Amino acid sequence: MWRRLGVLDWIRIGLLALGLVFVATGLLPLSEARESFDEIWPLLIFLVGVIVLAELTKEARVFDVIAARMAMLGRGNYAALFFLCTAFASFVTIFLNLDTTAVLLTPVMLALAPRARIAALPLAMTTIWLANTASLLLPVSNLTNLLGMQKIGMDAQAFAARMWAPQVAAIAVTMAFLWAFYWRRGRRGDLRYTPPAVEPVGDPVLFGAASAACLVFIALLLFKAHVAVAAVAAAAVVLAAFLLRDRSRLSWALVPWQLVVFVTGLFLVVPTLSRHGLAGLMTWMIGAEGDPYRAAAVGAGLSNAINNLPAFQAVAAVIPAGDRDLLLALLVGTNVGPVVTPWASLATLLWFESCRRHGVQVPMRRFLATGAGLAVIGTLATVWALVHVG
Image 1: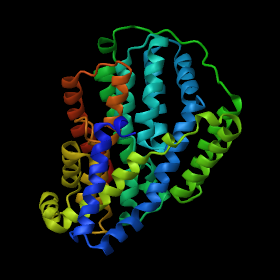
Image 2 (image 1 turned 90 degrees about the horizontal axis):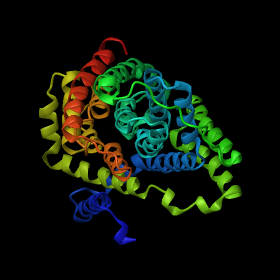
Image 3 (image 1 turned 90 degrees about the vertical axis):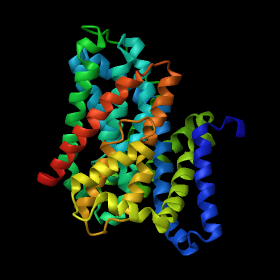
Image 4 (image 1 turned 180 degrees about the horizontal axis):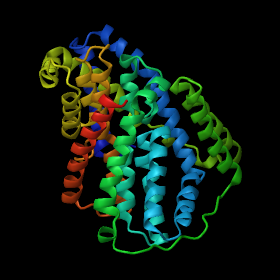
């Protein structure tokens, strides 16, 4: 098992080990460590539930069938396929979490590319950019949203009512950048594509159960169920189907232990650093004026420097709980902004690994330059919508 661990896995384990050292040495008081654990254990349950749900939904070929149907529905027209792909990636990100889009939808779209003779890079960029920028609407869309919900003091419905306009702005700017730099004919090459053959459903019981489980998850969220309860209930539906029909696909590898280790370590390390000087630095960076544009810029900049999860945790720690506008602006920066560097979000790191496995070459200069443009314009437009419309 130890030989199968990658560099990212060792970084996550090291982060948790460092956090435990901080607790053991008293740099982080045990009482504060307990408070951190009380805050994150529902999030950890949600993470396990939603990743298991997404993994088994992919195993049931739900994503494959939808992707193939989209390509058939487009009938060789790239503009139609573009709108279908952006809508699909946005929907998956909003309701099933950005990591689902990056980890599970990316290989589906890349597998579709050769069957339909479609350039792979436009499909890949659609998944990763929208995995980040389409993750503002619901608490479940991004772990940063869940981390901030308790401090923001909103339920899912109130959060969505406040963030719908920023989300529309973020998706609109992303679509404009995708079309201009990756999808238009001068970039993709071909005038039309070849619609693929009908994608087989596979086991209809598993397909139906996985589809129903996703609908259960969305319905429970709409009825204001706790995100952890919704994720576990939906995962239980599809798990039961696989237990009855195909137990061979069930293994402990479905459990996202890497995310659990990373988040737990994060909630030990960041509070410790905040107690020993980080809080003062973050206060200076966001300023005393309460400017949402500045908070978003700091969040986006730190995300691309160190990763959006620790960036959000570090900055949110110095923002008063009652300052919703500043906290929401910070979320904009840490959700829309992490599209420049490969390590800016966990989703982007996982996406690069998926592209590597499928042999898709990502031009790094182009990725950095277009991502920087999207980060700046997307963040500005989204904060404007937050301040003036949301």
